[in-house]
Image (cartoon, rainbow, N blue to C red; front, side, top):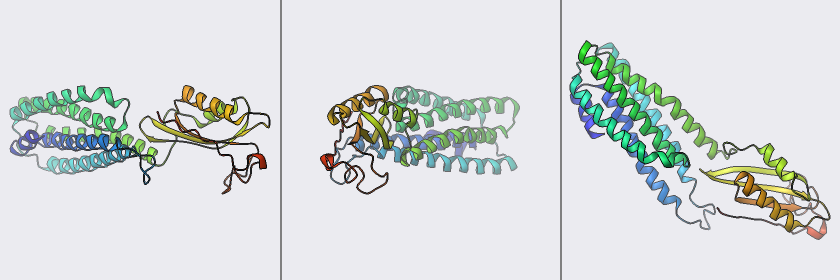
Length: 289
């Protein structure tokens, strides 16, 4: 990053500065990701009963916003340079771009395994991946500028890098906000979970079903199950919990069993609405993966 910043200033290359700007976000993202991983290891306490897993999503959203700001700055600077392209030293630009590509390829190799399972790692991987493509673009521009003298190629590559990163940045921000808004985890269908719970022996109906994600790969569920009069509440609870874990990989679940359907949204739902024999029965199962 420091080499590209120095090279971009000394060689008058906006493409190098663009690549350096994205590499700066990589440095920030990797540092924040490391901090997020360490903070997420802290155990839950009385103030944060779910622990610190959500910190991962906050850092992913922060990285996305940072990328947006950098991309917009590069687009603005490119517009100014299109009006009056400065002289560019193509050979020096080429050497630095090749060095940047090698560094990015090494970083991509290190991050590849974790990015499929962790949103925070995915954000860092996407930034490094975009930098690698940016380095390729800078290399091509440097070669063409050397042989043709077309200085406008330098800001053109910078613009291409910006437009290449923006859609992926938006996808990352959208995914992060979805988790922060307690959205249904990607790949899960509430209708399928509802039908599977209704198919558990002894279950009559399902209501107040909620599914959300704490962070990448840490999904939670809460639901109220109305069971038949002759059904065993513990058996229903065990069967429902086992089914959710095996079929939907939901291992952190809170299930309330009721004999009668209470008014949905009522403050005492499942307690005052239950039959007298089960008025104060609240059965919960919480299995942390």
